[in-house]
Image 1 (cartoon, rainbow, N blue to C red):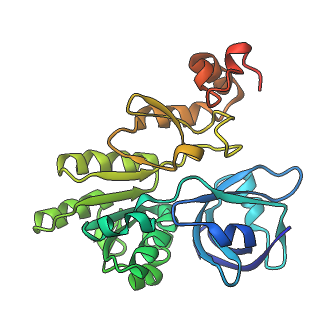
Image 2: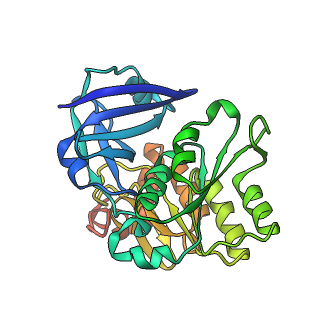
Image 3: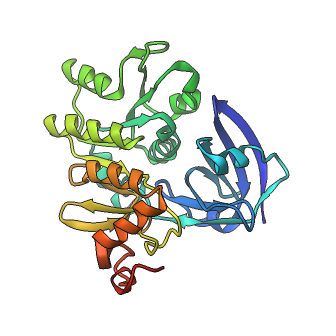
Amino acid sequence: MYKIVRKELLADKIYLMDVVAPRVASSCLPGQFVIVKMDEEGERIPLTICDYDREKETITIVFQTVGASTTRMADLNVGDSFMDFVGPLGIPSELCEEKNLEETKKKNIVFIAGGVGTAPVYPQVKWLKEHGVETTVIMGSRTKDLLFFTKEMEEVAANLYITTDDGSFGFHGMGTNQLQALYDEGKRFDWCVAIGPMIMMKFVCKLTKELNIPTTVSMNPIMVDGTGMCGACRLIVGDEVKFACVDGPEFDGFKVDFDLAMQRQAQYKSEEGRKLLELQEGKTHHGGCGHCAEGGEN
């Protein structure tokens, strides 16, 4: 069992929890995630590792209540426990690996965080600051009431720009509007990392391609098993089939087929849609396991 030792309401329907998970805390890096399960009947929920403390053996997760499972999770309190807390899963951020540090130090990096995408951006920016890399961060939200981690991000980012769609705080507009404004002022970047809703990342990539800024995105499709075998997080990246849980979650944003990913995510929510995807995708639906081609049964 994995005990909750801290819980906070960060913004409307957005919660933070610190969970004691020694094995995950001992080896995780920014960019990775966990899959949690509350009890025997609970759904498996993938969550980004927002922060970690190796000494306290804790992992920080941030989530937004969007359905029955996350609403149930929001009812948990300090002293309650998760039955499963599996991780670290996925590949760490390329920018946050010491083997790449000297090259990373040469880059002028901008992060664009949309909504709850602030949670996975924070540990990367924090790690980079601790290793001598200064970054620019653009944090976007629909409205002021949904902003969180503004003070924390201000402490680790060399430059922080906050935007709201409705103009209730900071720059009036979206993250792409702020990036364009910085570009118009003469600021230039060598690399962009965009994390947030798929539609937001799609339009960030559209702009950064025009501005010739290589861009990394963190894909957040539906995940179930975290091993690539369920077929839920299947993506097309360039001409290849990839699975966000094992090949990502980060990918070259210019190669991701966002339209297909969004269509597929909506389709995967129904049983009929899942069966149709199994039929259409054949052997590549379940990570190349071949089960779909043998009749479509898991």
